[in-house]
Image: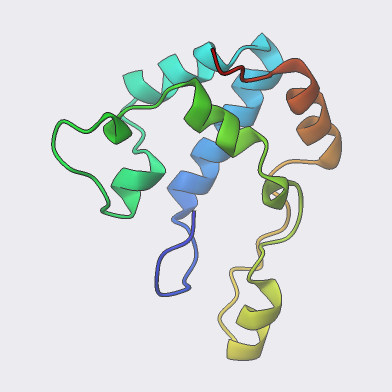
Length: 115
């Protein structure tokens, strides 16, 4: 999750992303991560960016949103803004949030299916 001004995601949000992968790896189900996120009040990307209308379903986590997180290749690599940030001298030095092995395992276990 990147802020509009190009700054870096909040470290708390990055920790929640790691937690999503941990839960998905242990449980093999998107629903478990969804329940965790909703029960712990973790904001959705839409809420974080201020793109929510009251009563909008974007305030809650559901399987498709979790799937969008776990399939994001960027979490298994360096921050996508690494080069630009190095030029500006303000990089967070964030390495991969999850290892490639964990990323591949979670993506093999957890699949989102549109019904």
